[in-house]
Image 1 (cartoon, rainbow, N blue to C red):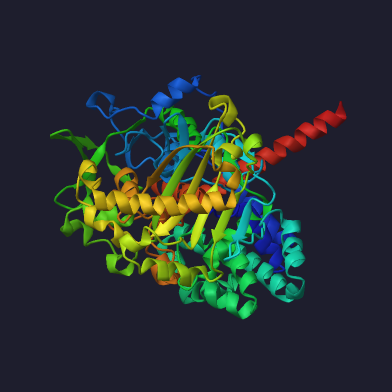
Image 2: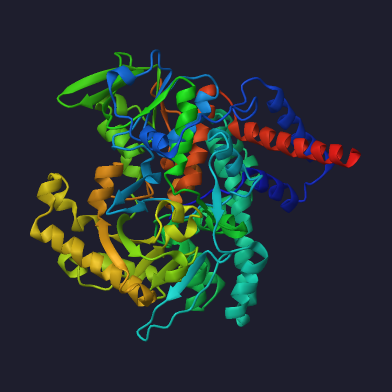
Length: 627
């Protein structure tokens, strides 16, 4: 589950059209800046395409597990990046292509962050990538990953109705709704809700408004602070993006209540709050709208599984003289007497290894960075108070290994959002008030179910005769916090095990109720509690989306302070916390941070690369016709 920011190219073009400013002057201005950035030296997305490093799958897997050792630290490191998730690797990839020697340090035993996979009992499971958008050839995100992976990263398209809402009442009725291709989306809704045409059209308009308005949020992240302040004080930003203020000051729940009285339609409109992990009554409609609108043109899954992202981006980082090292537990960010960053301290067994660099980028979240890695005298300089921020909902994942292949098991390339109450927020809040022991035997109000093996076109080559299922829900962190500071062995006492097993059984019950054909096909079951997320991914309370996606987070007062730059010289931030959640949200933060370090706007760099690609195709066609 994750947010994906829409193609900036599409957003800018739609904004120009939507505001009635589509004239020759507007296009000339856009073209002028594009050409300027194309000819400027240093665009990391344009130049001689590097040939991919020839590695077989075994060698690529070894890249993911290169253990931290002093001898593997490159000489004269320019930038250290803490964390090897999508944001850290994208940032490192961009910097490497601009001549920087980058060292990425990962505390887990494999690289990838939330995009990593793990194997148990002969099955492979992903932990954080269920679907992404904007990956059609020519889209911005596709261009970004294509460049950083030397063209090695492929994407498989999911079913056109890739998200299905399953409404389970006491009689177990099942109704499917799909959010898919743009022209079919409203038609699909009208088929089920013929009397709600007005509400559906208004909702569709709000999605488009959100997609246009998110450009304002991006500008707050990439423009110099004094420019942003000027645009806000003069009202120019709101004049350019007139819907932004309303969309960030109105929550999802209120918007849906205004649109319709039909409770089923409300849930179909709002089901995807699980993709950003914030209750509809707290989340701004901007977040929800841009997420839903982004998925209009379909969803994709990384070919070869989610670990393909790291496997195919690390070679480019190493080619630039850098490295990605795991089992590298950064215990401190080092600062001198003047508060300037000069490196990190890595805990290695009973010793500490000092690694020096003039720039350190933290991709592990604001809470971890300022509460755990910096001394108070330094962290106090940061202009965001931790009390202004909340963590998102904690996560519980269940992984099922299945005997049989996709066709045999009748699996689809889609996700299922399964609820037992149309008011999912109220049901979840009530569920959260239970004790841990009661929760272990209580029905779960919301479960997300998907089959990664069905989405990956080369799964069968790797795991013939097998399939996997991933099921995700939200739980209360307080149910597990008593075991937070105990060792892995100690956490397996009878109470912890009973709570974990009980919730797991409830999740499996939901899966089998909706997919009864799997009843005798389950060969393996394992679950990850919030403590698992904290241990492997370093999240403070086992959340999967960083700081909570509340209305306050998107309003200018806080949005203009959650930036890649900090008041601490040499320290930069990247990751979900400075932009928004999900693979594409993290990737966008990666290019924003790389651009901040280099003093460039990587969005314009990407536009230039996309324009160049279009021009090349145009000339190929012309040349072909001439022949």
